[in-house]
Image (cartoon, rainbow, N blue to C red):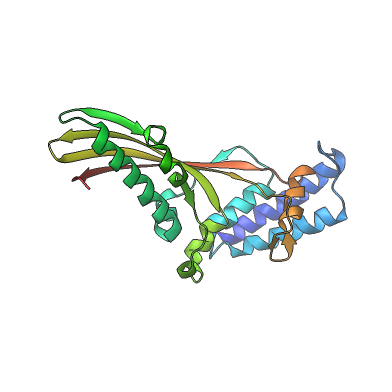
Amino acid sequence: MVETLLATMSLQVIVDFLVIISFPRQLGNPNFEDYAVYAIAYTYLLSYPLMPDGASGLARYLLNIGGTRTFNIENFLANSSNAQTNFRDNLYALFEASEGMVMDGETLVISTTSVQREWENQFKATSQPTFTDYLSPGMYNYFFLLHNSSASMVSSVTRNGDEYTMKFKYYVDDFYHFKNTANRLFFVTDAQLWRLHQVGLAHEFTWFQIYNNYLELLPI
């Protein structure tokens, strides 16, 4: 699998190089440094066995595809303790709102926009590492894929006496890009990787996924 991936990417490097020489991209022509950064970034794909999702995100960026892609949200929630915390905070906020909004015998759809303003900062998903995450390859896998991303929940809540049944969808999306900053990713900076998009060697894109689940809960 890894050999096939690398062979495909090597062919794409040649194709991209020929196309870029023949047809300069929209925001400026790449220079020697851009090509060097591009080549170095390709070597990061060797991390695929340890970080398949993180490497696939970078591969899509370098393959200049753009568009929208999905990812494994179950693995994301299982391998990032910070993502798990955000998910629980979101769920708790919706359930707390349900207690005050859903009448006995009724069903109500509640989303993050229905919840009190004080909870707004909870509706996010992140793979930002915590202290206990630093030795976890699974955390780095999603840290390099999503870093900080946006999230929201929509739930259909039914109340029967003191029992609540909640069917919910957890939406997570992220715009895969680099910023024009001096932050370093090993041998290259974010600014150098950001420039690859500007000169047409790479293409930013969007990750999007939905997590569906069903819960039966008692009052908090």
